[in-house]
Length: 101
Image (cartoon, rainbow, N blue to C red; front, top):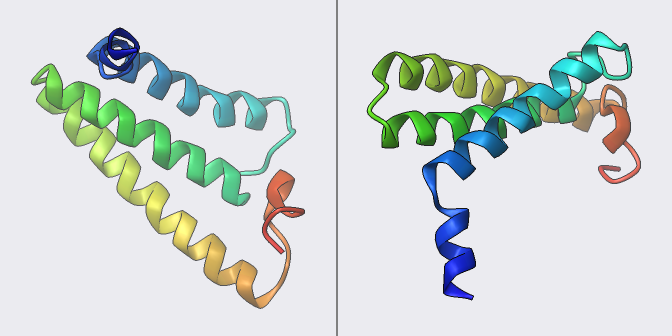
């Protein structure tokens, strides 16, 4: 059991999962399944960039830390904007609309 926990906290695992999480909204946007105004799009960008920022910090890759910190902050701002806008009107939630009513 403890071996599994060590694997989860390996930097390469954190970075790989973070990269995958960032790529999902990018691909979904490219194939026109998600809009960049959807909360899920912004949330996944925030979560993925946060994981990539942690990965970069562990590897002392400071330009990558700066890039992903900015990416995470902008995505967080968009998440807050989405939630504020969606509290007034129930749109732009995209695939999460049924769970976020």
